[in-house]
Image (cartoon, rainbow, N blue to C red; front, side, top):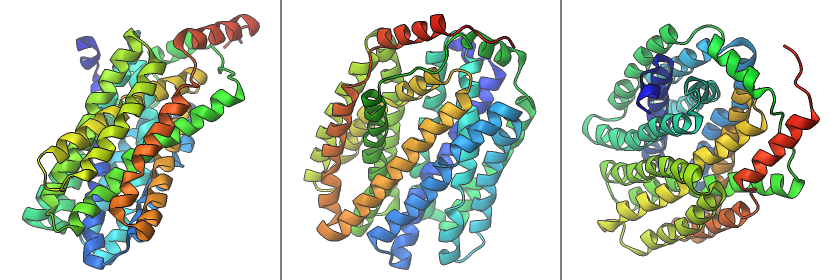
Length: 403
């Protein structure tokens, strides 16, 4: 692990990942604050979150294809510059205009994530699982810190200054990444692609693939809906932004820890059962925290436990997708990350619609059942040895094409 952190490319894209996700996770706090100021309905806030996430998710496969084809330097630095630029522009606008402009920030995240996930795996060499988990840890730390920092800044200095303080550092990180990432894939990356060329895309039975797709939906939906609507629920109760930013940071910090623990358990025990048990157990804190007063000191702890258990399967699912497309890892990363984010936001929008009918508190209680549905889908996932056997069959059946 220490050797991975000494790699300049890995360190730069990981810190960039943290900065990208600081800006990403600050958006729900900022939009919730603006929604309260503008008097928006829950459905409207859910629709805004959906638009933001679709911009930052559905375009990820396209950016992944570009990274595989032409290299990742512009996407790495440009993604950060895009996000920072729109933060700084929004700081100069009215609340209505800022609300709309901030919905465009997600495109920078879409450009950054596929190439960074690919570069993290390539830069990790023979420790791909550990490196990928560490890369996601940096992102989760950013996701955890964003709501906390945004909440405190919104209370202390107001909206415009918050946007300026968050956006400016991202510009500097973008210049650092520009200096580190080479214009094209490195020789090491090309060698890795050549080694993995013997493993063609895994061809799994359609029930397994259908369960995999549903698993992506049900894994992300509870986290995305909680991230979007917990600030609104607490804000409607008269709780200040710094308090609900603090609580939301527990969700993201838990997801960060869960991602590392999930990767560790997947390597040393079972990827399948790590996903099944973590998703099944996440239903408990998702339901219990809503039975307490929102100012109860156990609420952040329970929200953090939910984040830990929901986040445990994240890196496992990304590595599974990369194994299915070993020669198109940026594309595979873009596909699975983009689908998870967009599916989570679609679920969040449905939660917002339901909230306008039965109330936000009751709608959030239904997320426990969504997590249980994800655990049921994970039961259909193949074990690691079955994936390895499928890869070996493909290797024996299809000779490697010369380069």
